[in-house]
Amino acid sequence: MNGDKSMEEIKKPARTLSPQELKMLRSKARLLEPMLRLGKNGLTDSVIEHVRRLVVKQKLVKIKLLRSFLEENDRKKSAEKLAEGTGSELVDQVGFVVVLYKR
Image 1 (cartoon, rainbow, N blue to C red):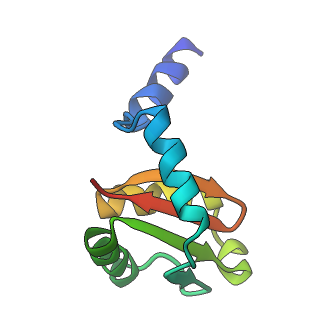
Image 2 (tube, rainbow, N blue to C red):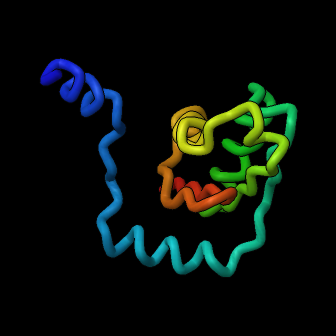
């Protein structure tokens, strides 16, 4: 089991945002409307590229996951995959909403 825990810790990306920065970004994100809605087509390469462009341009991006998307995908894994694929930080993932930030 100890081997499993160390593998999980290795897989998790190190956060570079302080707790104060996360709190500030979450409060800013509450005021945002979702810029993208992900549906039944899922996370394709073109969607990840589009999100990457949004994050570079806007810095703070809110994404809504529709129920049709969640029927086939896991929320947390999808949020992590989006953050990793776009080179951004996962600020928040609550319910059907994902918030990404790029410095």
